[in-house]
Amino acid sequence: MNLIIENLTKRYGNKTVLNNINLAFEGGDVIGLLGKNGAGKTTFLNCLIDLVEPDTGKFFYNDALLEGERMNFKQDLGVLSDVVPPIPEFTGYEYLEFLSHLHQLKKDDFKKRTNEMIAFFFDEPDVLIKKISDYSTGMEKKIALCGAVLHRPSVLLLDEPFAGLDPIAVKQLIAFIEIYRKNDRIILIASHDLAYVQKIANRILVLDESAIKFDGKIEDFTSNGTKVIDDALFNLLVPQSKTAAFDWI
Image (cartoon, rainbow, N blue to C red; front, side):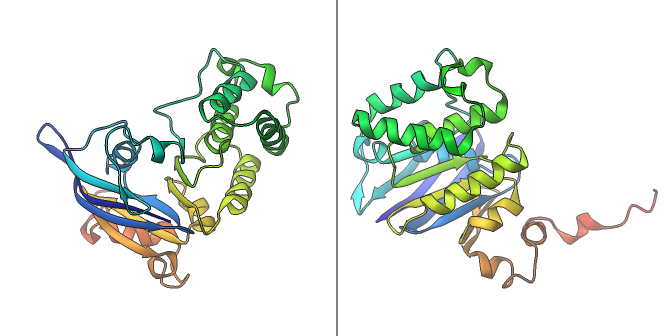
């Protein structure tokens, strides 16, 4: 399987957020999408999932050009995003059931997947009957993740998946991603939590100043593990002149 992006450009007024981005993702890729605040990571994801219309660009999924509503692609897409949070008026069960109807899951598949994920991610036995508006930030993030993978998508996009999670929940999420990764799936993770990205990504993508500054294996990015991932990112993006001592202090 593959997902190909050609000549993706997005501008907001006079500001170019993405400039002629060309990328190709293959099955088995777990990509860490890194960059400073405002680098365009969320805009990139929103263009990909059709929430934002790019100025130019083409998308190909399994060598087929995505046009119009892109329904075949969207049915095979799972998204965890703060832009589209879980519906707060629903209970956890109602939200997952709603998604199961959208994806036309069989009732037995829905029950099995829901029960296993809730048992894995939650300690609270009544989580499914509580309204999402009453959830903590971490609980909302976890129910959103359950919804993103309920239909077993081949392309999974996770925008800041570790934000708001306690250390135990983070370890659970990393373990789940390790289980979920397959040779016929693509997982793209946009995150500032670099230590967690380093644990699971096999490929690093750095976006800065509307362009791709690095795209390659994590081993190359960290010089075969001799650099910590946050040091490697800092050295790539921050000019040495900005690390000068503050003599006045």
